[in-house]
Length: 248
Ligand SMILES: Nc1ncnc2c1ncn2[C@@H]1O[C@H](COP(=O)(O)OP(=O)(O)OP(=O)(O)O)[C@@H](O)[C@H]1O
Image: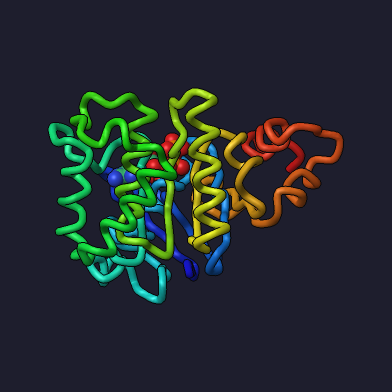
């Protein structure tokens, strides 16, 4: 479902070149739920931007659902949903339901399918009480649930999440995690999750990929990841060790 083959992305910054992502190869199969970890500046957002076609790779290839994202952005938009936890894709001054209606038009979702999907998402994400509320008046947790619904209204095969639980309280986090688990288990949606919240990883992801300085530093199961640092009991300790390069 997601295939990167020696993908790279660099940026020219004045006279220097920043290699945000280098020589990155991995495959995520349909139905997987994969955590994508890395320290600040490791290249996670750059990877995500290449996956949704916002950035073109400067080397190698990226494919999502068989499409080259930067060339087939419009076609891909029907297959992929993206949530950036740090910013909303909803219309700030419009009631939530009007944002959804606009998204229906943009994605040309059939009206009957849209109604059914919205009813399901309203129920599972508990949106009913604030569908008529302007987005700017929503709490962060409500807004995030709205953003998730917006990303899923067109029933994409792949969902890419960039810090979807940032700033949420424990109850809101648990609600979103449960929702994502069910989405993956019941609908088979492929999920790639970037987060600094290791609780998200422990609760949701069987497979974890870790990127550092733009390169893949680890790809395996959560158990494999724990086994990289025998004697460390918490995921936080193991990840800290990997981020700081201890033991290299
Ligand atoms: N548009 C850009 N122009 C120049 N450099 C950039 C650009 N975008 C990203 N970079 C650089 O590429 C590197 C990777 O950035 P990226 O945002 O992908 O990291 P990240 O893993 O998402 O970090 P964080 O966890 O802090 O969000 C950083 O050194 C960053 O400064």
